Image 1: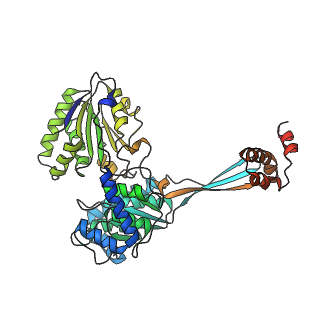
Image 2: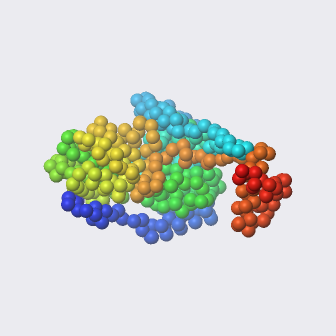
Length: 436
């Protein structure tokens, strides 16, 4: 089920590790065509691609606010309480990320800086295989915490042309302003460039399949997009024999059930634990509701990696840069303290990634496809832009002016130097004074 890779005694681990398949040029070309057609043809293109990929064209792209509000009241009461509790955790965590205005003063120059939220944020939530109300919370609530005034949600329609009630209920709980029944790369293009029915946004966030992730990369620049590649789900579980094998096994299955393009790795220095986890995976999989999806993930990128030590396990983790990292070992700090690249780390036997997926607080929109090397979880910072204003007192111009003219003259930018000289700066006198 899991392909065994034995790296014990190997010095160059990275050279011997299986490498995830790169995004194909064919996929990029296909997505580029969708984006360009939607940009040119608007709603007509949305209808074309939605019928092609989802088999339906909704009566209206926008879900009415009345239907969204009704969904909140119509779902099971226990589910509503769970979603509201999760929303409270997510909102509270992200409010703590908001930064305060700052002022910096030096030699007569004052700088006031602050984070300015974008005006309109687009959140993408996958559909098709399942409904993901949790992703509504994990994208819309960080935007709200950042101070975004308009939050837009795009979700693929179901076979009946509607968005699932549980997804709409989450949208109501999160305070989403507009919900649209459109998914895939066409939804990303619609939010980036606007159509007759969907107004363009300033930032697009949210996970999706590889085509959605590629689409976000293609529209970056026309619209803000987080640096991370939020694509198919990934997990690396580092475990030894000190925890039940079933814990590691089910946590591999948890992320693999999202679909066939993900990644699920077990890393251990204990061959007995490796055997036990693989046996537990086979047993649990026999009764798994989404067995086909899990099996597809394991067939494509499911591995058991045997290494010599916790230090070597951390080296494997840093090479993969997984979306989710779970460390269930006797001394987890031996691994975690050496990890540089991971979207989210779950420590100990009582912290499955599903806690982070739903209720812990940080967004479960995490970097995949190796982008955890340079990006982290979705947060408030993805919905704001840093702004500042500079004011200069007379003494500040007297001190800084000569330095401005010296650098401007060296760069051959006469007008830059003149902008200071015209304000009464005497280069020679001030340079002498400044160097005393």
